[in-house]
Length: 225
Image (cartoon, rainbow, N blue to C red; front, side, top):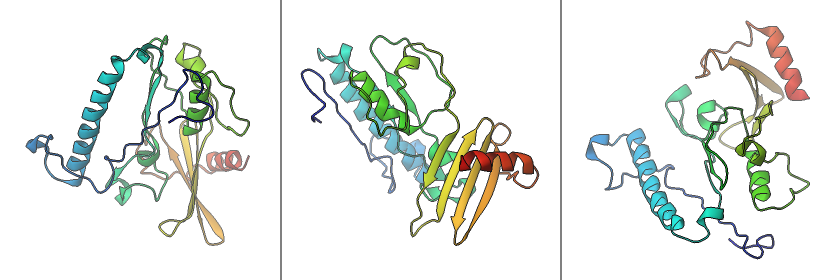
């Protein structure tokens, strides 16, 4: 996709692949032993996309510009298959729906795993930095390029999330700081609060708001700030 910022030999391609998405399709290339349940068909969709991405990347590796091209793979959301009584996506801010992969192949950067939490708001500044451009003033995130090249990964918490109110769900906000996650639901004139200890309860199955009032108050103050 060429635009006003893609000049000279600088270029950018964005590919949004919709196959691993409801409605799930079982492709012929998938082994029959995988089954035909929703989750099985979802796995098949991922297998299908992985196959075609592999073909694209194999072709890219044969091009003269491959050694100077960065490749970023991420996702716009996760998918639920019964967790919290939910299926598909949206509707809530559970981790099963908002934690997504982030894979970077950047020329000159050594392989490493970065465990510090990051947000999608950091992707656009990262792409802009890799293209040698200055970040836009309205960016709220920050480039990941320094840590991709070995810099110590700084703490960028709290991580903030929001889900706008629709006909399918009320307004939700969430904030993650350290081991804890606060989910706030807006319905009518009031707000309800749920508190989860992700270190002990990664599935977010036990609301600790009533048993840890001091931590709840601290997280509510952090979200307000």
